[in-house]
Amino acid sequence: MKIDVIMPKMGESLQEGTITKWLKSVGDKVDRDEMILEISTDKVDTEVPSPAAGVLSEIINQTGETVDVGKVIAYISTDYTEEENPPIIVETKAAPEPIAAPVTGTEAMPSVAASIMAEFNPPAESDEKRFYSPVVKEIAKENNLSAAQLSEIQGSGADGRVTKKDILAYLDNKAKSTVQPAIVKKSETAPSAMPAPASQAIIVKPASSIVSIGDDDEIIPMDRMRKLIAEHMVYSKHTSPHVTSVSEADVTGIVKYVKKHGDAFMNKEGFKLTYTPFFTMAAIRGLKEFPMVNVSVDGSNIIRHRRINFGMATVLDDGNLIVPVAKNADALSFTGLARAFYDLATRARSKKLNPDDIQGGTFTLTNVGVFGTLFGTPIINQPQAAILGVGAIKKRPMVIDVDGEDHIAVRNMAYISITYDHRIIDGALAGRYLNFVCRTLESMGEGSIVL
Image 1 (cartoon, helix red, strand yellow):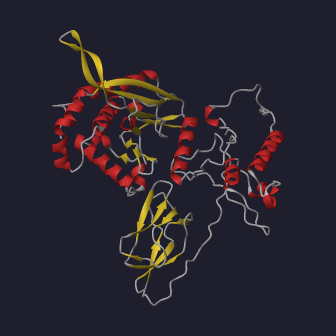
Image 2 (tube, helix red, strand yellow; image 1 turned 90 degrees about the horizontal axis):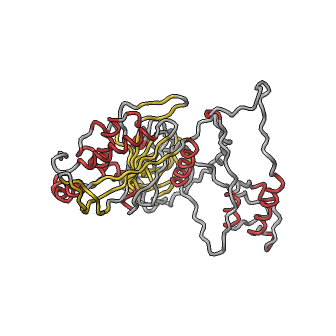
């Protein structure tokens, strides 16, 4: 009996998934709910379990193929015997992805959940079976050369192969022949040349620079998630004028609290008490006090979010970054926040997140201090309007007031930064919010937190 393995639906808005890796090969025995492949969607990566125990008898779609939700991608044989001939892998070639059209200001730029830029497809082998080295392919990819353009290059290598020198010379000649002064076309009805409104501004993508690649250099292709991150970071910088303000907080009370109650918390909750829930609680209290920081921009409108969906930047085991979101975080207690972010981080690192877990965020916190960084200037997670950065906690001599007199004491200090969209958040609002967060952190400690 054959059991269908189908492309699962990972969210209401998702209609397809990309197979990133088969964990089992044809002929391998599998148990029910054993993970047999990894898939990637525009929202999240995850593993797919086997729907039944048996043998993986047929793989229909291969690694790299994008398949509609609900379609069969493999079969599990439940009555497979050792005497049967091993099944044959059925390969289905996916159609090449179209190259995205240039983006103008009147078109919506994709978010981090959007599909990645089309990858370079090496030219199909002709009758001559022309060979291209990895260096040549990489240079062609970086400069968006098509297969037809590659075929035009006269190779000076053995058997007419295209060398690095050949392709660089081709690109140099191409650049010289195509560079022309920019021409601004005036409107026939406009009496004078006026600047275009911000909503209609055209984003000009700079030409890719030619990277010098030596024989001892290693070429590491970006994985799918890294491409999404890169795309989202560039988009955010193009969208929002970023400004960062920095302050510092005396978190000595928090450090003492964690040392004193860490073991009891671990015994009660089953996971370690960290500084994260203290920072998130202070940030959430600040958003309640200054609701115009918990906003987004929609054209010429400001969207003020009634609820606080709090995102926490999380580093994965492969070094990539993802931002799971705790929905309605303003309704959670201190322990509830700790539990929510522990659960999200754990599921993120084990690829158990659902697409809804990383959508709908209204504000984000990133803790650069876990890597020893004093403070950072993070990039806004669009379409949000601000992101809070937390630096490393360091002991420093500080001047403190004791009964009206100044004293020098060793205190645990942390730099806190806020990067904000200056279109809708001014320095005064950002400064007041940041000051509120820092003073809230300083007030936390024994007697202020209920576990």
